[in-house]
Structure formats: C-alpha cells, structure tokens
Image 1: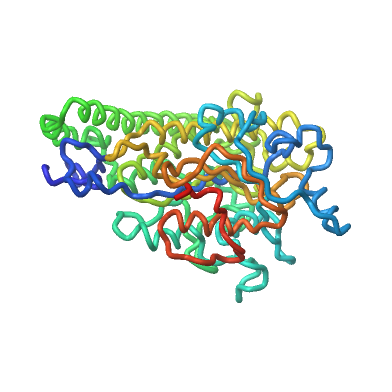
Image 2: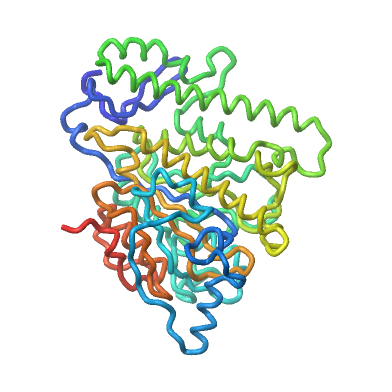
Length: 450
C-alpha cells in the first residue's frame, strides 16, 4: 500500500473496487507533486431569463441581445470590450455570492445558427463544438468533435475514463432526437452517450455487481479499508472517513430515490413517475458522483447536462411549485410566467453553487482545492429562452486557481465567438492549440499575468 497513488483502488469481495482520493500518508513523492488539471461543463437547457441573470438588464422589456441585433441591422455599434471587478450579483447569480472571488461572469459570447435545423437541437449538440455553419459535411448540424474529447486526448490518457458524460434527464419518452439531449460528441454523427441513471453511473465508476448479500461498495471494501487506516496519519484518517461517508451518502440517496420511484410507479399519474422525483436531489446526486470521479482521478474531464432541450417533460422542482412543471413550456409563456422562470433559473444556479462548494472543500496534494484545479463552466446554448437567440450567451467559469484571474465580469465585444472561450480553456488545460472551430482569438483576461 505504501506505493499507492491517487488512482489506487481498494478491492473487496466480488472484485468490487473503490477509487481513493489523494492522501499524504500513502502517496509517493511523485504523485504528491503532480496535481492533474480537470475540466467540467455544467449545461443548462433553454437559456435564461435575461433580466434576472445579466447585470444592467433588470428593467429590459425586450432582451438586450435582441436589441443588439437591431443595432447591428442599423449599422450601429454595440458597446465594446469592458472589464471590471464582479460587483453586486443579479438575483439569478446570488447563490454564487460566497464564491464571487473564484468565478468569472463572461458576457457577449455568441454562436452562429445554421439555418435549416431546429434551434434547440443546435444549441445543445453544437454547444461544445461551435463549428462554423456549413463547414461540416454530411450533417445538418454544425457539429464536430467536442471540446471535452479534444481536451481528454491530452489529459485523459492515463485515467480509467478519458471522459464521463452525466445527464439529469430521468424521462424515457424520447420525444426528441439525440441532438436535443446530448452535448458530448466523439465526432460528427458519433455520440458520446450520457448516463442518466445514478445507479448505472455508480456501477460504471466502481465496477460493482449488485448482489443480495454484499451490495454496498463501502461494505465490500471495509476490511481492506480498516487495514489501510492503520497506515494513515490523523489528517488522512479524517479525510478517509469523510470520503467513505460521502460514498455512503450517495448510496443511501440512490436507495431513497429508487424506493420513491418504485412507489410512484404504483400511482396513476397524468405524467410519468419520474416527474415527481425531487429535482434538486437528483441533480445533486449525479453531481456528487461527478465530483467523486474527478476527486479520485477516475476522470479529468466531465460534462453534466442538467436537462434536455425542448422536451416538454415536467419536473418536480421541490420548494418551488406544488406540482411538476415543464421548463420548456414555461419559457414560451415568459410574459405570464416570468416569476416562475426566474425561480427555475435560480434553482439551477443553486445546484451549480452546491457543486462549486463541494469542489472547493476537497484538498489536493499541493494544498490547493479540487476547484482550484478544475475549470468548471456553467452555460447554455441560448441567450434567452423565449426568443431563442444565439447571441450573448449566459456563461460563468469557476475555478482554475493560480492559472486563472477570477472575480471579474468580462464583457466581450458583440459577435465574439463562444469558441474563443473554448480555445482559451484548451490552452489553460495545456493543449498546444492555436485555433478551435470558429474562434478568432482567446480571452486573455482569464490568464494570470506572468
């Protein structure tokens, strides 16, 4: 055990394995010095209500992005690049108040819509590829190999999983094609399928087989774990206990949601049983699994899709509404449902803030946090959910530690391609890349000077 590294597995009966995070007592000198950079994308469907998200738009009746298009058509110039410290947060962003010094709000980023295909399909499937319209042959979508896989080609060659794809779409009605429900692609027409079921993702991460007598990972490896604890110092024993407790919490939460789903299946609802599952609990459970995978070195790259585009599936946003509601249907009635939509936007931001908090609390081998070593981006493929605009997308980038200058509101000039951010992130992850998709440059304000 003395030669273990961050990716060591404890193994129990039936070949069950549990990946360990970094611990000083059992780490080699080499593993203690090297902290892998990570990247994760938190995708929110159907855009946002602009007046709640974007600074300075609280009183806008017409979304500012549309006003920018009007100005462009009249030959007028929208405000150019502006950089300032991140000030008072808007209502939708307020859950991030505690982490304001560790995030960047990036506005003014655009994507170009390729005419002839559905707006929602493109905004999801092409979000991380950002290919120029009409440049990709054999597809109606400007879809190419996505950023996560290009980065994984560089930083994911030694991890058990080059990438992991998480989805919080629990429904199975298949109303739309795969283009509405996936943001990760190996290449044009080649989907990297996301996992929606927490239990399935759990099995994939820990290689477990569910058997009656020995079901829980923490039970299966307990004997090995107790033996290992004897070799740990006090701090690592605390860290070890916290890690095992987090795995046990995930197991218990999966059990609770699965029991609830089984009970709901016995009731005659207008909506499917999944509609009544507590939405926040499900998102946080999948998020906990993602954080564990990044923490223990099972992967360095992950995508996390909060929900699908345009599906009218209802969700039980616990604490917000008395019955399940469809995010997409609400977005098409923004005038009457503005307050409800603002609640949903803030609800999603609270889940993002929850995962930021989890990452920030996990210590790495060099004393930094998991968040310090992860580029963790919140974003959507639409700038406004009701008007379906592709310009001025809602983007927040958290983490990055010493590599990234944070606590800023970076307002890019109108028309700046979203691919400029993806190129910047690729370079921050160590890729020797000078161009990505339709990029025209990088966002230098994200780099720490010197």
